[in-house]
Image 1 (cartoon, rainbow, N blue to C red):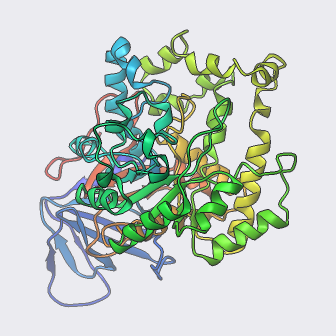
Image 2: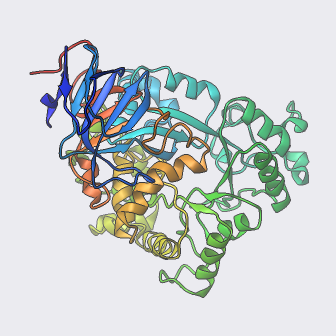
Length: 511
């Protein structure tokens, strides 16, 4: 890492192509002679200068004769690439991978260390913005109150009452954990006592999410899995009303929909995005695209419905059975050593052992074929993604971290590996880059703040050693994460590096 490129200068002058009086640059940060990679930036073949003041980009172009103030931080971007910070639009920020909330008291110190590191782990892999698809305002406020973290936004989770995922939460706590649930009048006799159904109509729920600061709505179509396949699902009329109410307030609606049945339902109800790829088909004997699946995907594209493939969800279920998974050196950058050590204990292996209660899983693992777990769903979702991409579908980048109690969904790294899954499925580096930057920003209505490198936008930026439009491996060459104009050395964000160091605009960053 070229750490010594960053200098704070008492005086710095550069002669440009024009003549005239030298002007002083009023900026907190100057990134000079860098290749700007941003959707809509038409001079990527040239080097540019980028100025930041008060956390905002104030200039993108080529400076001429000038000098900078003594307090300006200067980064030499020669032979490097400046891109917008990445957006992971499918996270669950209150969760620690592999550790459920009721078990936290027994490992309080480990959990505390993990919660301190998790925001930094997203930043380590370049995610400067995260969207929690099922949260509440207090949790997001607590996250954003931390000094070093990505900017968080949230969707209000709106399942039908006692449906997925509420059905996996204990009563009556589930009604506080997911306060935006929907009332279904056809099951009125089952509705919890003491709760007013009028507060859980689609319009009332959307109004509360909006007033609480949510930027989107997420609902669910899930009949269940494993031994539970009889969960209540919403009616089409209920979801249409939810979508209409959300759209009236300018809020997009996503649906947990990973099956052929769920995505067909969502198409008919006005949903804006699928929060998963289609890995469950009615005919589970096939994995190759066929006429009925193609018809659903074609209709999805025609209706302008976006797709979050979240392929890594399936690998998270599979990789927990990999006996060498915890030896992956990349984990040391995103998970504290204490948490990694706990995963190796009997208590930390609880979810792996629970999965082994399934005879099919147990047999594969016993025979050493753990890597065949979820092979068919992985093939299906990858084939759908390839078809969707090749036919012009709109992609949203999201990792679903963590998707379940598996410890194989580590923060930040999970998103980086999801990128590899997309590339393997035929997504181009440009399509991936667009989905993780301006594509996400536009869909969630935050594109006036982030998503491209333009004047007026928040200075959440990444300095890379390689061009991400040429190779996905470029995302492994992050040198600096610039967060609201503050420069963070990537190595200081690693879980094994000690405290994070924020550069000061008045101190020299030298050896």
